[in-house]
Amino acid sequence: MPKNQSTAAQTARKASRSGAKYTEALRRAGTGYAPHAPHVLRFLAERSGNLYHLVGGIAAAWAHSGQRVLLLEEAEDYWSWTMSGARRGRGRRKIEPATPPEPTTSTLWASPDGPGLLAHHACMWQVRHASQESDRGLPRTDRSPLASAVADALGTYDVIVLVPKYWSYPDRENATAHVVIGEIDIFPDTDCRTALPGPGNEEKGVPLSPEQSAAVLRERCLGFLFGFPHLPIALDGVIWQSNWELPVDADYLAGVDRDMDRAGLRPMGWSLAGQRRSDPHKQLPEPDRLNDPGFVQQYQPIAGRLRTALDARPVGTS
Image: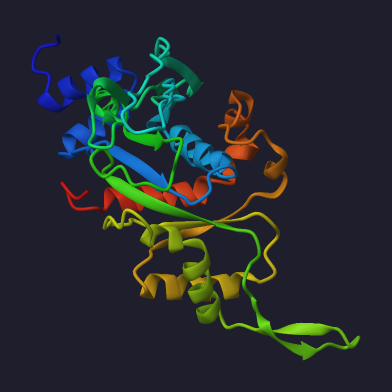
């Protein structure tokens, strides 16, 4: 090691060995820069089939901006259980499970000259113990595999995005942040219960104000948050995805966002599904899409606002 080298330079040199740019690492070390703790992000959604490209696009935008991002996806459940003997007094017969799938890890995108990385890891999130039945005779669920996978990734990635099979249930014990995604089929810009005569004698719905539209969206698209099991959840923001072209302009959407913010739902942006509705159901984007700057660029505004909101959270908040 060169003599009389400053502590900041030593720190920067170590960072450069791990893939960071030396000059950037030196600037951070010299100014006392302290990186944020890794975020473990859980998106919540009532229906997830059309949202995989949105989540993958946000993760790719983070990676292209120089962050190390992991998509931690839940593997298919391999257990098969059957109950026999419906009559009282007969025992239950269990079918033993097949061998659980091995975890798989792949690199979806990596920067050729920087630390940016988007990786994918699929593994079982839970196991069910046949020898530990609940009061109802069902196997007890052990979610320690997910906790272990998250713990193993904390020292390697800046953001860990949880991609479960069922998106509506909040994994409060593992995630440090929750963002709700509202999927819109028909944008509520008119009241369908009342009508006005149009120029061609057709009936037109009464226009709604942005505030009224925001109230309808909350009731229609976010109602699942208040269903069973009624667990309180702290939301860090809301993202809207419309499956069709929006019938309103940017000023109208800004009014909707203001009312969402007033209601305590920090708006992160709007996305259009468009032609992605014809893509494979419940699948993340292909690596070729994640390498396409045109694909990634459309998610950069939402990704930027979301990362800013996450970094502004108080340390230890979950």
